[in-house]
Length: 268
Image (cartoon, rainbow, N blue to C red; front, side):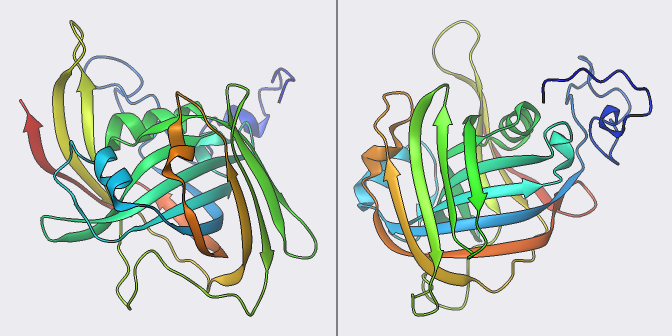
């Protein structure tokens, strides 16, 4: 969007849709989330399930206490129409690259790489939950035959190209075998040290947002990952096992609708 919003009644002036800042929010001190803790949207996801050599994932998670639960890695290309943190754009996009883990009785997932199209989405994810979110531009184009094509780029550098074509004969492969799927997300949240390279504070944060995905639509996928020294997702060298498309009319966050926990303080 390039036009300037001058009309005082323009709905885009409601920067976060129906949600508002909390008292004393957006300032520092006493606390400084520059966005509401509540948010909502719908969700349309192409999930490409892959297998990655276990050593590659364990290296990425070496400084966490999480137990890796599978050699599968999910590449989730996620378009969120109507996202309340991105009213000006009409939607948000995320690429989550996720692995299943266990910790402290939780069977959940952690994102080894994550990319987001919106600054508030990046801030909220990194500040509050320790996500590995970085900025991105994207395409996520849905076609009349049900196929989807798209790409992910960061600062003009290509990271991923993907395509999905529905195919009822294709297998539906989930991130683990069996009836129990991991739920929620867990991360080590770190605050960089201001005086030197290092961590001044770290803890473990868990969240589980409301999400009601439709039955997966199986299909065939292609995915090309591009080398980048700053975003080495291509070094995972994933083997595609399957792909599917899912939608959810329920996706959102906030104290009243999700499970949010500070599990453990690590540093200091």
